[in-house]
Image (cartoon, rainbow over all chains, first blue to last red; front, side, top):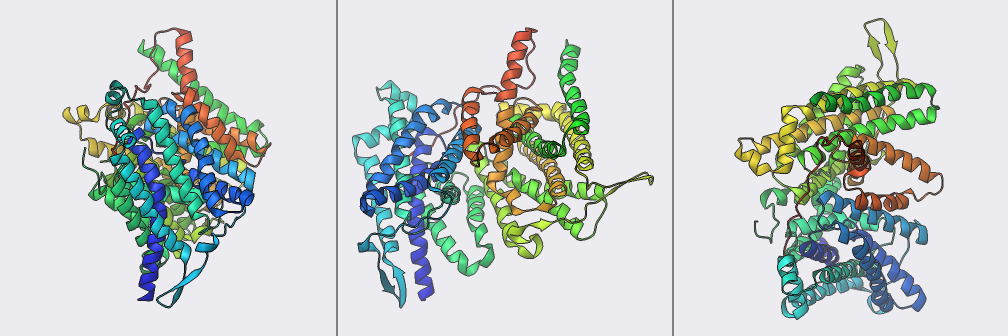
Length: 286
Length: 340
């Protein structure tokens, strides 16, 4: 029973982190039609920048605020000077270009901060341990479980109830039509990529106290967030939420029922969903 | 007219073959080893490009078949099978079967979805190779100690322990495979593949079975990729799960795009550029990936037909013969979008 509860909590906290990263990825794909290979590297960059900002100001909250914003600057540069040129090109060029950005960011971080592990302490208020069903459990993971749906809900309301959100959705439905009614689509694209970058980097900064930082931390998470996005349906918000929860819980329980083969679980899920519902759980067929 | 074009397009490859045949005789051993690796990865990239360049399918799991080929060779050698032909044959047939299965499930998808499902299948094979320690040796991989020899007509016994004899084994195998692939590309079947790349609906209306044709292309590509894996296993004395990881599957994509997906030998050229670039960069810095990224960006942005393809198109223009370079890719539509 305790094992079950702990696995659920682990699955939820990992799932919420995946959700934050996947909504950035899915928004960028939904609006611009580009699947961003470098998204995981922006996640990693967010964690490192948060750590660096923490060292300057000695406050996790400050790192959480400043780190992702610095990453956004880099994201905007990438969009304005690189991605913009391949929107109309074949998908292999888009993947390869973002892959090049991944290589540059990963190795760039390795050059600046070294390839060793870095550790970030959670803030004092979230640093403790509480007892769950007789087991010690870190408070920070509860924080992650709570913060995920909050940010997701805020974003969803932004897209559905504000003027800017509606403009972005208009541009994602039909960019030519949107341009026709006077919407500055290139500006929207830059803004959306900035938003996606911010979400990835925020996820990285939030994950920093929970895992040790290494330059390759983005490479694991990018594949899993691809899976979340495909499983949920590319471009779908609720899909990303359900997909992230399913994957988080499956991985958490995989250690119990699949033993050594738990590594294969995400890929089996991906293949199964693509075969049964090629458009993902939450996207209507084309 | 037809003859001019044909002789023109063959003179380059023939010259290249002669050069590759002579080169190791005058090169230092280190470069012979490097050239061997270029040829193996070149074979992988050329067979990968049968999918990307000719069929219009971006496979991101090609490493799986490379790895399956390598593992079947390593397992056969461990079991004591010493017949080189048998090993090469098995290293083609096992990946062929695997590619038939993966292709059966994958080819109904297009574009980015196809890339994702092949990536998923590739990583599935990676997970198996990584976790099934009893058979695959886990993350350490399977070492190969004794290389198979080749008995020529009961007269000469060839062994492949010296780098130069290994080079010629690779050279001959790759040469045969590339010729076969070229025949496939120029056959009616190859034409249908190109037609599907341009418009699969029309192929379907004209009576082509798009699904079966795509599976066939996927399986052929997988078989030749597997053979490249066998060669790499013999060359490297090792089969490891890394061959199946998505970052390895990205290599033929990079090589094909560097070289040019619209040119048959472009990916081989791209493999050469990739390795030579690596050699140059690692002389100056450890962070070769960083500079690979820096080099890739302008290639993707400014050479839409790949370096080799773009240069070749320039050449055709300068030569002014009014010849259309064969199999140049048409403009693609913007890919399909989702909704927030």
